[in-house]
Image (cartoon, rainbow, N blue to C red; front, side, top):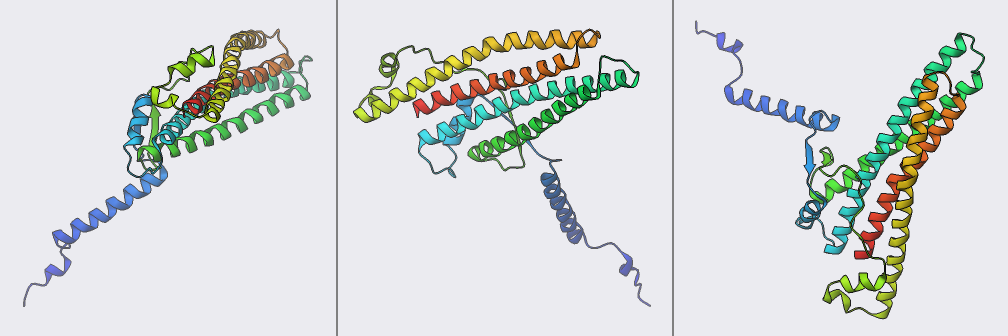
Length: 271
């Protein structure tokens, strides 16, 4: 009788090969959708990102629009990241304050009430809401910037220039700015010049607001450090800490937003 043991042998090598390929493809697709296998792309400078987007054949826009949009999403990622760091820092302070307040209340201390604890919890809830919104804003900005750079949406983006910083804009008068433009851009109609001057005024306003926000940031940080220390030592009130955390959140988030507004107004001006 012929040996029929071949019926129990493994499939031919070719079949096994394609089976493995199918498994690997499925694994990579599932991993990409889950974020496990997401590739992180480190973007260089803003100028490098703009240059890369301008070479992307899938983007059918004028070069001026490509430059502006890449800058917008780049600045947005920086701003949202900075604001997210602030919100997470404040969350930590609220978490700690809630735990300490509940402990004091349970021990029967008279300087803390249920109302105080509720206010701190509401502050924590508001901060958690801020974190959710900023995380979403960050994901969407990265999604759009990645699209301009030709990367799929499952790939993460990290900026080399992570910190928000103001662009160089040292013009105090419109005439100085106008003279700095290229010769080809100076051949403009009176209507275009009027539009440029309006944009210049808005950029100067945004710059002034940003400079004011920088000064306010330093004062607010000192206020928060003091109130946190007082509360940790048991000599500060939960109400004062709550107010300091709310002020700190508003001012510091506003600081990063002011840098974004200024940078974007300059980008619009050059567009």
